[in-house]
Image (cartoon, rainbow, N blue to C red; front, side, top):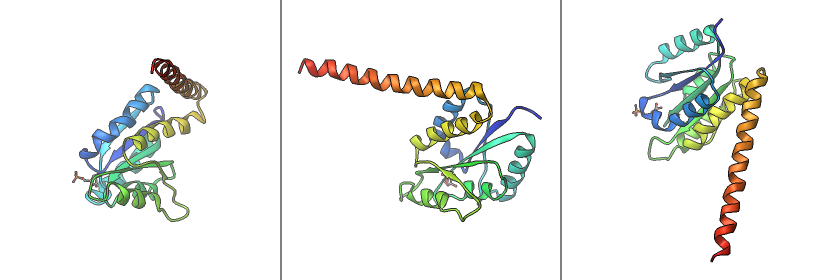
Length: 169
Ligand code: RP5
């Protein structure tokens, strides 16, 4: 079987501007991924076929983004026992609250790990997938730890720079 990969599914190509944040994170950790537009509502049979085959080909985690009545993550979770991460997209007049509730309110036994609405959630979907894969991959775990340390160092540097600016006020 090929290397474990992450499948990033989107209900529409209009979700891509937000989901670029997920792809950037996966790329930064050298994680293999596939990206596919497929919809729980518009192409249910194709979604089922893709998920079944992706699991057989070595997909380890599914990340599913959708807006409005967002059922993609839940539908995928109903097909596979791989972990499914859901990203609610702000695509309509309810600013993503519709997608958040549709994604997060799964019945018991069929979990979707739902992240925040929009770009922060898309970014965290990438990190969460990396952390899931890192459970069985010590090298990746080290890269995730180093990334966390780099983030902490950046915040400390911002504070130091702020303290300097405050001195001259
Ligand atoms: C959802 O409907 C998609 O995930 C997208 O967020 C939203 C709007 O889709 P388009 O009308 O832009 O194709 O299924």
